[in-house]
Length: 224
Image (cartoon, rainbow, N blue to C red; front, side, top):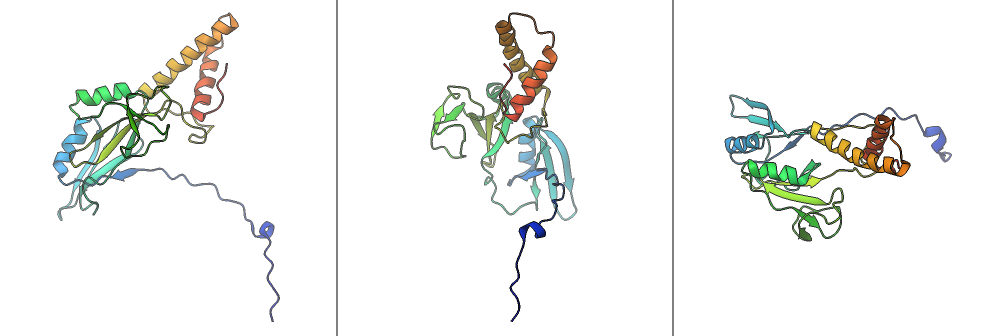
């Protein structure tokens, strides 16, 4: 009879290796007419990265939305998913009214803005939608929707302040000049209130702005 094996968690534990970055690169969009889809996404103003065709008929087209680190691909021989079955694809914007107006100018059939009766976390369905912007204009709470010619569904979602845990507290990044400008305007408005409270001009305002923006993105308490 063998002696029982006793496992010590302290002994068995080994140092963790440094975490590998896993960056979402592409999302596959199932379409029925590749050239029609190419015209549609090109008309959105998205960057055409590639249009590769092989002799056997395989074709892959890649587009990247402005300011996005992630791209979409579609084509022939890419996926067996039913065209139009991709739903709830979120596009994050800092000003949903401006983003919606740009889509309208490009001839896209985009919905009116709406918000979710259940709060800031929205599901891709239509149940619980209320018309108009979120009354409190909370981050994550205002939406608009549109579809490509195959019915693949996209959602615009307005995000101005990230939830705690969503962003590395040591990183402050912006995906476009528009997003940075919006953050600077919010910092300027908050700093103006700060100077009113102190009753004097703040000569150290660049550092105050930087601290405000970094805290805002990390979801930490803002400077007063």
